[in-house]
Structures are given as C-alpha cells and as structure tokens.
Image (cartoon, rainbow, N blue to C red; front, side, top):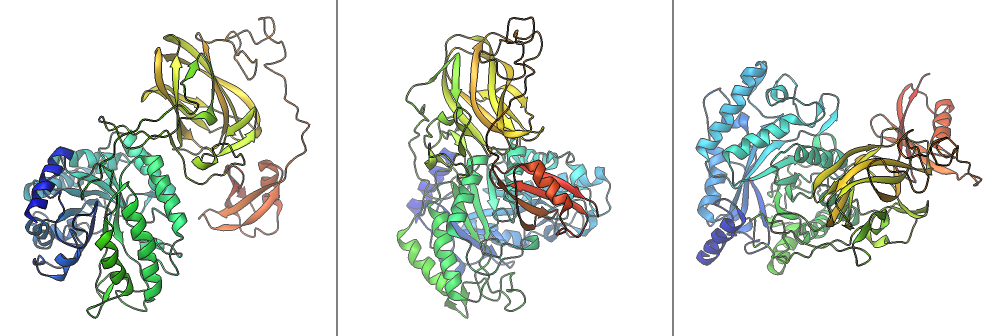
Length: 627
C-alpha cells in the first residue's frame, strides 16, 4: 500500500492534482478511476470498517453543505464534513467537497438578505471553507443551476434569496455560475472544479450541455461535469431528480448520450450520485452490470460515486413502497448488484484518459487528426463540408483535443457517405450536405492556404428560419464571429458570404454552430475582400462583386426566384405542448403546412403555445393556438 501511495503522490504532482490523488482502499484500489460512496454521520469510517473495504472515495451526503455547516451566521460546524475528509486523508482515499453554491440546503438566514449582504455572505463562506480545507482535491463548485424557464432553475435560486444577482446575475449567460468558478479557482488553484446537476441524461441533456458550453466560453475554469445519474432507469429521474423506476435505461441510448456530452463539451465527466431504486434484484443487477461497466470503460469518465449503499439508509423509497430501496447491501447481505460489482472489479480496472488524477490514469499517446482525403484542402478553393477531418485520439501537451468534430452519435441523415461517424449527412444539393445542425455542433478541416491575406468565403446553405448562424475559426482563434442565415426551405440552397483573413500554410479551419437548424453543402474561399461569387449563386449586395445589373454579372441572378419542378415530399412533424410532452405526429409537405394544420385541427382543445418539430431535420417552430 505504501508504494501505491508514493506512486499516487508522484502522479498527482505531474497531473496538477491535490493531496489525495492516489488509489487506496476499496474494491477499486488500483483501478483507472475511483468508485466511491457517501458518508452519513459525523464519525469517520475506520480502516477496517465496511465502507473502507468497499469504497475509495467519499462525499459527505449532507455534511459539507452550507446549511449544515453555517446554520447560524458566523458559527461553523465542520464535524460531518470532517468525517468524510479525514477518512480520505487517513485511509488513502479521494474526497470531494459537496457543495459551495447551491439553490438548496443553504442557511435559512440567507433568505431576505440584500444582494450586497448575500455577496458578503457567499464570500465569507468561500473563505471559511478555504481556511478549514486549504487543500481540496475535488469540489462541486455549483450544484443544480440548469435553467428550465425564465427565472426557473433546477434548485431554489432566486426563491427568497439573492444568490444569482450577488454573483453577477444571469442574462441567459449563467454569469453567476462563471463567477463562482472563478472564486473557487482563486482559492484552490489545483483542485478539480466540477459543475454538478441532475436529469442530465434523460430530461435536460441539451440544457446541461448548453450550460457547460456557455460557462466555458465565458471563461469559467470548469474541469469536469458531474452527472448525478439518478435518471438511469426507463422512467427517468422524475421531477427534481428524485430517482427513476421501471427497467434499466437502454444501454445503447446511454452510450450515445455520454458520447454526445463529451463531443459537445470536451469536458471530463463524473458519475456523481448514482443509484438504482428498485426492489427487484435482477433489474438492479442488470443496470449495474450494463451501466457501471460502461462508466468504467468510458475513457472520458473520471470517477463514479454511488449515492448510498445500505438498504433502508438511502434517500429513495421506490414511490413510498420501500425506504432506502436503492441500497445494494440488505440486512448485511449483498444484493445481486453488489455481488456482481465485487466480481467485476477483481479483473476490470477501466480506462481513464481525462488527465484527472482520480485513479491509475491510462496513458494515451496523442494521435493528431488527419485530412479525410489524405492531403489538406487547398485555399483558395472549395471545402466540401462532408470531408471533415478524420479524428485522432488523446490530448496534446497544450491540452488541446485531437477530435475533429462534435455531434451526437445518432445519424439522422440518409446518405451512406461516412455513415460510421454519426454526422448527419444527406443526399442533396451538389451531392452530400451536412444537415440537422444543432447549436454546439462543430466540425474541423485541415486546410492549406496558398498565401496570407484577405479572402471572401461563400457558404452554400439552406434553412427554414431566420435565426440560424455559425462562426468560423482558424487554429482556435475566431475569424468570423457570426454568419447569420435565413431562408424558407431546407431544399433551397443559396450562398451567404463573409470576409475572412487567413494566414498562409497549413491550418485547422473550424465551423461552430451558434444557432440551430440549417443545412450546409460547402465553403468556397475566393481571394480578395468582397470578391464576386464565382458561381453567381446567392444574394451579393450591390457594389460588392458585380452580380447586379450593369456591373458585369448575370443581370437576373441576384433577384431571380428559384423554381423547382420536383414532386413535393410528405414529411413527418411531431407535436409537443409547452412542457415538452409529445402529443402526436402529423404529416405535411412543409413546416408552413404543418402550422396551418395544427392551427385548424379540432384535436387541440386548449389554447396556448405548442411546438412542431420536423422528424427529418429537427427544425422546431412554436405555434400559438387561440380557441
């Protein structure tokens, strides 16, 4: 054991971890990531206790929460938090502080304080934690802040308290979350700083991804994303993330979602509060067997924490039928899931390439991304979007990823071209186009620019709305901040243009989808600022290329209407209410036709806002129904 501790300390120093970054007790000793649990009392488990035999990471269930520590302003009780911290310190385990900022279980005296007084109280709380625990390995900096509506969050932010304005507000930018992370980094420069939330797989996956993307863009030093994983069963996590029911969440669905979260956030994950609430031993074992093995083998997951393990002493009660039913040891005996876990961890150590020192980190030799067709794409010239780079693996010394695109793993397209990538490629336009583009998706191409200077880039795009947009960057630096798109059909491609300055030589060109729902066929880079469209396709402005009457271009090109003699295609559109409940599916030739059908149908009895979503391309339109 001593050699493992020394090895772990060296690993922590190399990877920038803190004092507890090494394997120690428990079934996952020597694994690539920890498997931990919660402490529930003010006494630290001993070296021979069951907790120490089973687990190698501790999170205090309630003991480190602000309301538990500072119930009376200025008076701090660290007893239950110390129990978890001291167990890790004395037994060679990992410790996570849970949590600094949360809209729940904060002190009652915080309610009613002014914004200024709330800010002072939060700062004092951070400082007190820093003084008591100057070295922390992992911290849930912000807990349960996903926005679910105007002024509505996963926990009680703004309900009688001024936490949000005290930390900088929220103008749809989660500024208060970013502020909290910056405050934490100032105090714990080496800690793993985590954002933690529930329903991040089944119910609010997209909102969680958007939160991580937003705070990273705003400069939040977030190191990891904690998925509470109370929603691992077919009935989901329920309102407030209070545990699921039914059978196990389909394992392929889970694999696709964790891949999507990684692809779109490039942020390591923790499974932070895992539980399977059922009295059926076989169902619980199946969930553990499928899901824990996936978490262990997923290289982007850095650690797993179970939210209780003793039957009758966990927070879930199977809808009032059996208190503590998520426990995996009952009456001193292993349930089937616990018996499986013991056997699994004897021979399976998992994979961890996150760079976070939460186990015996798996070394990965970085492999760079490569041009899809072997050579960089020449500029000036066309970049066919479907020819995005082949992804590499691992990370480089500067921390940059060798991934070449970020998209969910489900292929919504109808083309067989590169169908193994999950990119949504459709047979349309000049051959193959990239569709179903959602905010957060991104793609990269290796290009070779003939000479440095100004270029005009023309993008062939189609959309059914006026809110879509993308940005372009070169080697990680923004080159075109926003290209706004508008249109009336996903079948009508036209060119939009922007000026861009490019350095000579080999570079990585990247497109980020900044607002959803458009199709794109290609980019065409033409030398010179405000150059003419070589294909005379699109809507160049007068005086910027000669595509208007009297300026040397085709006199009618800029104003002509495209006429398609194609047979209309009947499409499917799903109908949802404002709460996201699917009401049914209709058929229509266009989104506009679907809107009219929805407005006039007798099936909708109640007035209000409804949503239409195209099954083919995911485009969404809100419809107000008056009755």
